[in-house]
Image (cartoon, rainbow, N blue to C red; front, side):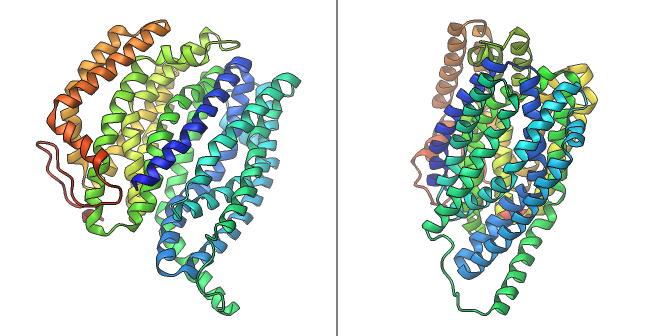
Length: 516
C-alpha cells in the first residue's frame, strides 16, 4: 500500500499546482460574482446525479470484487467489467438526456436564492456540462481497472487534464464574454480522458486473461453471477448516495440563500482544504481499497496501526495552519483582480470552518475506504448516513445565525463523526484517541504561538506557519512515543503486516475484523 500511496501523492501534486493556477485565475478574472456562482451550481448539478448512482457502485462495489476475481478467476473479472461498463454506458446516456431537458428545474432546486439572470447562466452551463457525463463515468471505471493492477497513472492524469481544460475555458470565456464556455472546461477534458483511458487499459492488457473459449450461454451465466455479487456488495450502500448528495445539495441551497458570493467563495475555500485532502486522504483511501482487500483478516489491525500515527502527525499541524491563518492564506492566493475585500471575508470564514475538522476528515475517509475493502458495507452505510445527515441539519437550522461559517463548520462536524464511528467499527478508536491525547499538549502550544503571530501580510503568515511547524516538530521529537511511532512508519518496508511498536500507553486494540 505504501508504494501506491506515494505514487498517488506525487501524481496529485502536479494536478494541484495546476488546480491552484485555475482557481487563482478564475478569482482574478471573475471574482466571486454571479458567473462563478452559476458555474459552481452547474457543475454541482452535473456531479450530484452522477455520484448518486455511481460513486459507491464503483469504489465500494466494483473495485473490491474486481480485485478478488482477478486473483481467483480472471475470466470473471473481465465479465464483471464488461457488464458494469454496459450498465454505466446506458445509465449515463439516460442521465445526459434528463439533465439537458430538466436543467431549469434542477438549477432552481439547487439554487433557490439565485436571481433569474444567474439561474439562466447556470442552466446554460448545465446543458453543456451534461454532455460530458458518459465520458466522466466510463473514465472513472477505467481508472479503477488500472488501480486494481497497481497502476495509478490514469488517476494521476485526471486532475492535471481537468485543470488544463478549465484554465483554457476560463481564458476563452473572459476574452470572448461568452461565460457559458466555462462549462466546456469540464466536458472536453473528460472526452479526451475517456479516449485515452480506454486505449490505455487495452494496451496494458488489463482486460486479458482467463478462458475465452466458453459458449455464449456460459458468458450469460457468468454475467448473471458477476452482477449478482456486485449487487450484493452494493445493496447495503444504497442509502449513502441519498445522504451524501443531499448534503451537497443542501450546502449549495444554503449558499445561494446567503448570497451568490457565498456560493462562489465556498469552492475557493474548499479548494484549499480539498487539495490537502487529495494529497492525504484520497491516496490513503484508494491505496487502502486495493491493499486492504488483499490482506488476511489478522493483518488488517496491524496495517491500520501503521497508518494512523503518521496521518495524525501530519494532519493536526495542517489543521492548525489552515484555521489560524485562513485570512492570510485566502489573501495570498486570491486577493487580486475582481476578488474584492468582501470575497476575502467570506472565503476566509468558510476556510476556517472547513479547516477545523480536516484531521478528522483524513482519518475518517481512510477508515471508511478500509471498511469498504473488507466488505463491511452495512457499517459504511451507517457511518455515512450520520456523518452527512447531521451536517444537513446543521446547515438548514443554523445558517441564519452563523452565516457563511455554517457551511464549513457543518463539514467539520461531519468529519469528526465519520472518524469516531468508523474508528469504533475498525476497533481503533481507543488507539486513535490515546494518540491524539498524547499529541494534544504540543498542538495547544503550537496553536497559541501560531495565533499570536498570525495577522495581515506575508511576513506574519510565514512566521505563524513556521512557528507552528517548529513547535510541533520539536514536540514530536521530544516525546519518545510519538517519535518512535512516526519513525516506525517511515522505516517500515511497504507491504509488511507485522505489528508495529505501540506508543507508550497505547495498547493494540482488537483486529479490525473483529466487529465485522
